[in-house]
Image (cartoon, rainbow, N blue to C red; front, top):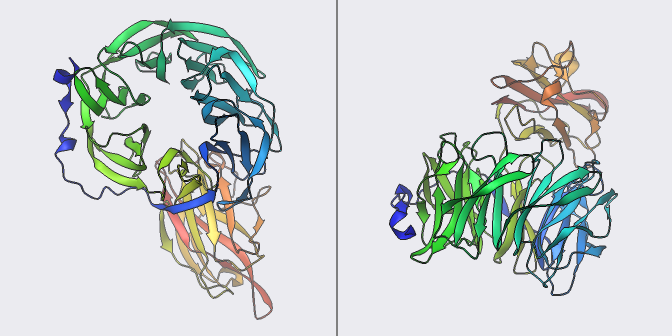
Length: 508
């Protein structure tokens, strides 16, 4: 029985302590809409994050579009002509691989016999009418992965009747349903749990109180069910990650059975895609939804747990989790939440819907690197500042440079080097040049900018094409890059230039 097999983690006995969570700003409401879900995407292809909102309502409710104006500002909600009957969750992704993001409904819970649909993005924040995928009704969960390795996202779909795989044929076309198994399936997760190069499916079954594994054999084909746990009723979707750092995929979820209380637990993965006994994380204040997320940027997958607000169970290493600590604190109960870059700075903020008829957000205010050199005040009286956001992973290649406190409407660009420096007034400048050696300048198309009325510059850089005097090179893990901003200025009517502070960043 499950009760006898539950093993208590040491996380239940540790004292609550500061866990150094990511720096999130306070709640910032975006729109007064009673909504099930909201997703961020660049719907009009202007380089700024927009938001599509899925409203509540018994009858099909039309989607809302909020145009992003930059810096986490959004225009008033505009109702779109499209609605998705019975949907509770949506995802933004490029299903037809045309470079424009589409909308896929991934969970239903409204009227019976709701069709499984997607909306094709046509560009300019225009979408097609709902397009039906197969004959599935009342879909409970969808796993999205490139199952056959052809470069487009295929689907694994759980429904009250069966679980199926559906091949994406490209161009907005889908193949027939391939039945994996028949039953009442509530939730599924798709990942390569046995490291054989094929995606597998972890499934929670409603009718048999089971947690099962279907091993991928090739493409969209899967083997028969293998039981992971027979006495489990899941109230959340299974979440897969390597929680104990041993190189094997683990499973976390809220479980409960005929003989045990509901429990937030994780199943340690072992060689060959098998799993050990469930390890207890908590048996109180159990969440409605969980999500694996690195809350404190230490490289370990933590668990976000939503029950009213959202708490973080910090992964302390070796499969031990700390006590829950507040992560997202909203003025109303959170209905659904998701990480999303809503301010275009390459790091993950959070977007949430609440029971208070508010779509809201939480800004990730963390920055990367360290300021190692300070310049001189510019004509505003302030020293220009530089921050680096995104990821310090060279492989992820997601870095944004942002300069602020610049003179309005001044022309500027970013510079970089692998060598720091400190030269006062180079070439008659009013500032301090803090880089030396082989200095590269971001002066390609669209990279030389005006600071505008706000006195700011922002640029997402490409680490695979880092400028140097002899041509672009790829930045790699282990290198330290030094960044600064050069900008024009005017002092007492005379044209001059200045620099911002400088930031150093070690790439991982």
